[in-house]
Image (cartoon, rainbow, N blue to C red; front, side, top):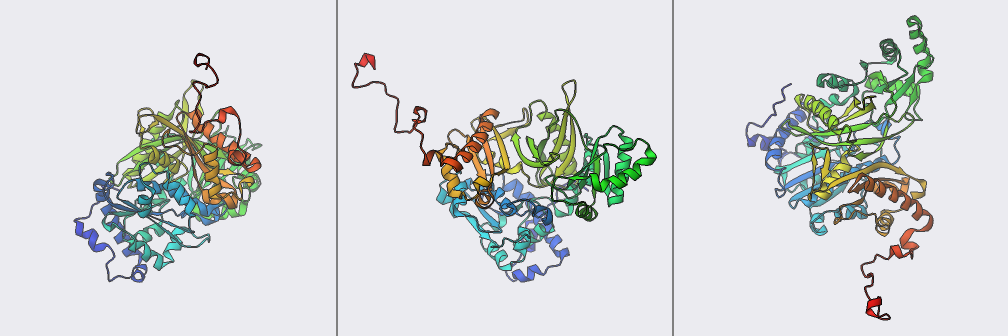
Length: 566
């Protein structure tokens, strides 16, 4: 496939393909898939002009339609507590309202509490809240079912019509999403706007089997294994062949092609495997159902294998190693086929075998973050040659060598926004800075480095019942709220999940890695203390170190003492 971007032959082509006044929304919803694809291709050709002429400039009018749908396997998603509120992770897009002629239309499954919206608008640097609010349109499906948000919108023609009617700048409007599928393609056509995301016809590039092909093409290190496996028998054959290739291997990992966040992974141990090759096949066949261990404790062998037949998958060597780490690199490919690396992270992983994403620290270790950048550049180039656009990330297992160097095994590619997208974009929107490829650090608009410690998975039953207003009160009273002057502090997300699930997301931003981590753990300590004693606002301390109110000053003289004694 050519990497040369496609452009409309002339500007009238885009105008002609957009829905016209005589096409009702019901007419559009009946369009066959062939016409949907044709219109989608025309819209996304227009995205090239938008990228060159509109998007780089702060004052050009644009409308950004944000559809934060997790259009992924709903059976897997249903196992994540508070999953409906994960749509709110993309509320960082509200910070685009700092661009004075930008309109944001944000659609969700359920209505977002006003206090949460106000929280994000009040973080905007240099923009009156009323001005930003006037350019924000919030719409809701009023539907808490397990369907993806995009499917809910597609089932509501009147809602689609309201979205279209609210687009202020139709010639410079585009749609953003969490991940792209044929559902997002159809919605973008019904709205009459291009989709700034991976073409759904290329979504296979993000599955585990294609990841291994792309790693091979990019010439990067990745675990020994086999792809394009179809069923249980293929898994058995792959495990046997892998053990024969790697006699010293202790464990192998089995992955669903479309698994995500580690939930589609299972681990198989070769402990006690027979040394004779002739006995190995029967042993694996017999032991596989008994030995396999899942990241999700509620998963069963039968259900996993049913999913494997549906999605297909891979088997690869589980990378062992003392002191191993799990970093990642994030990149961005524009509609012109040009790309760059935008960040590196050290991932915080949980679950029985440490394969489930919990959070991340930015940046990755100084010992190897530039090496990760280079791998990200190679993989990004391989993706862009095949026509991919938008955000991507590569996850690694990094193992230290005796000589002090590191081996970085590329594990998977995520062709969507992920858990490390919103922390970095939050930092960027709040501080107007840039990521520096020369040293792998982020510098604010004033040239100061910034670091963060982020999570999507802070959880405690003690937090249940806390409202968004309670959270804001705690953050202010405990001195944790992000401060625009110091450009440090805590930014919260997933706030809607707090009261019902006791779950919260946080990005702790600091001038040093130590300060970022300190903000994070100070927040944990404060939340735990507040739920027990009421915290500083309900139970104010009287220690002299707390005498920091702006009405208070340290005295320089005393009327009751001679001046030379004061």
